[in-house]
Length: 181
Figure 1 (tube, rainbow, N blue to C red):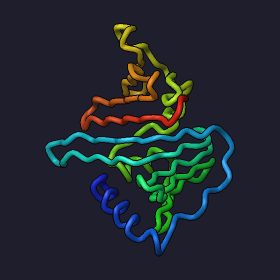
Figure 2: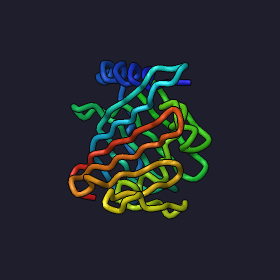
Figure 3: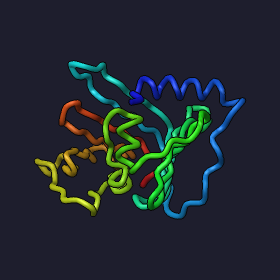
């Protein structure tokens, strides 16, 4: 399994090699594009160290068909996840790897599953329609719980979204959107 540390090393190597090999140009995907910066942190466990990765991102499409590009601060695309019915792939300068679904892709790359399908709605400040949700308490906290994650919208007006899964190992996803959602 590739850990975040391994991904970080792979992304660094990709940045160094960017002049020699690049990720292929994106395929046409319809739908809205969300962009910004994202950090994913997986807390330490008795058997593994804490891991985190930060990158600029561009998310386009929807849960059924889309793509997620991760880039360096200078704009070099380091990795592209793309999916459509029956196909999920991660493309890096080193090649393409296919996965059974988006959960399998995030589990392989991050060491833990991140609900990419729900992320589209979460980045808009709303629960995903594909699963039950409950508002966080007290309501002034601005957020909701869904799929075992607590999504904080406390700074949503500033473009910030934070989601945390408490189940060990705890996973935190923080995103700062460019512009407003």
